[in-house]
Image (cartoon, rainbow, N blue to C red):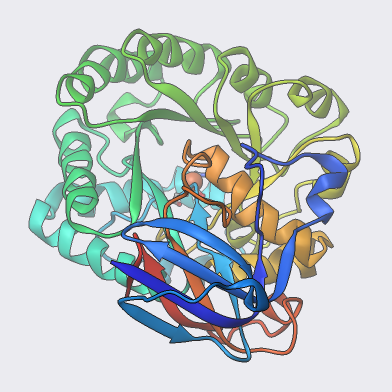
Amino acid sequence: MRTLIKNIKSLLQVEKCPRPRVFGADMAHIDHIENAYLIVEDDKIAAFGKMDELKEQTFDKEVDATGRMVLPSFCDSHTHLVYAGSREIEYIDKIRGLSYDEIAKRGGGILNSAKRVQEASGQQLYDDAMARLDTIIRYGTGAVEIKSGYGMTPEAELKMLRVIRRLRENSPLTIKSTLLGAHGIPMEYRGHQEKFVDLVIERMIPQAAEEGLADYIDVFCDEGFFTVEDTERMLEAGARYGMRPKIHANEMACSGGIQCAVKYNALSCDHLEYTGDAEIQCLLGSETMPTVLPGAAFFLNMQHAPVRKMMEAGLGVAMASDYNPGSSPSGNMQLVLSFACVNYRMLPEEAINATTINSGYAMGVSDQLGSIAVGKRANFYITTEIPTYEYLPYAYGENKVWKAFLNGKEY
Ligand code: NIG
Ligand code: FE
């Protein structure tokens, strides 16, 4: 099957020599071709270039993109989109002034979702999550990482991971799965949380590994949640089964989570509202992608991670949605683009790099996704008719995706 997308006003984020990620000043640059074509063969990008250099040939399908732009699909490297029910009542408590921490301490927050996930059937979780996946496809996402973490018992964590496996088998999205056994501390383990850490190490990690259910391991390593010591124990256990870390760190405090991520060669460390010079120095030269979650900072009205300082120091930065019922009930990566520009003062080019190639790196798929390059998977979207690419973050709230292509097929 050969498809031609022709008369593209601007083909963005093209790469002749694909890179795994981009750093520092390079983040402010994206390559694009005006009046371009893109050729897809089966599920791969076969060629691209300027329209006036397109040779006569036949195609099974042609799409005229006059007035429209083409971008690689977003890679959303951090979500918790398998969950049951919603938590808008708690959100009202937040509006009334209760902090995230206070809500968690009352047994709300993550524990509230855990109770509902424990009670839900695998089928219900699957159906709800599949509907969310269909929505994010329409908003331009082409790859998504999904975490467990609302199970809190070995049984419920495995139920979540099996749901993620079914989603991966049946959705056209590229999906990576992460075991987040240590997301919150169940009530019965309060005061002796090392026992819960034992449960993660002795039951959750080996069982998930035995069924091949987790690509990565995550821990909520932060003040009031799991300590660096707890985290190190779990990451070492995960490493014995080949699970690379992607951890939640420094959302509540400068808690040592970033240093811990680098020490264990994590693929990413995420949130990072509390990041100082020592943390930035530690990340420099590492293989760990700092990942910021603007939707959560927006929704929880938190201080913002020092993204400009990170980029000025030479770091690459990724951004993801954190789609979850408690701190970011949206998986809309176009909104993440707008938040990146408005709240973090990123340039549109920086925001595009953060949500495509760098977030692709942060979930281990940038060799296949995150840019328009020959041989990469044909996951991209055609925009509505827009004047410039800067219009994408600027016109926040409206869906600028006209057609989404995944694995070379239109959705
Ligand atoms: O990434 N920070 C920890 N975990 C989630 C929140 C989960 C919840 O509140 O349900 C997050 O924001
Ligand atoms: Fe998260």
